[in-house]
Length: 132
Image 1 (cartoon, helix red, strand yellow):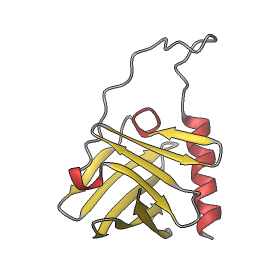
Image 2 (image 1 turned 90 degrees about the horizontal axis):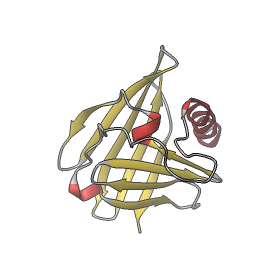
Image 3 (image 1 turned 90 degrees about the vertical axis):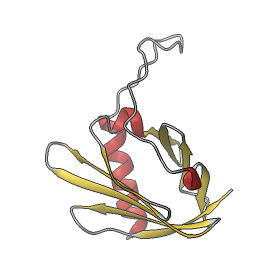
Image 4 (image 1 turned 180 degrees about the horizontal axis):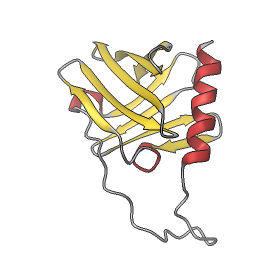
């Protein structure tokens, strides 16, 4: 069930993202200004036990790598907003396709462990991630 929801999300996001590279691979448009500012405890790479979900938190962006897809959250979610940013919780949300609300929760459990929950329309899976 978790895998199906994550694959569905990646599919929806992949079709909604625009690539800003020209045919030669050169960047043709400036990067959008990011709405993301993860807390310092979250900066770095976080991976699940099966190495299928890999989040990279940067000072001003988030990237998710799953299989052959990399999602740049600044591009995929330019209208996202941060809901909570505390010593142990980072949450942001956005609406896709004009009606589907998705929320991302990252809750620190230990210095190198966190729970990642993706809620689409209110419910969703929780996956443990480890800092690498």
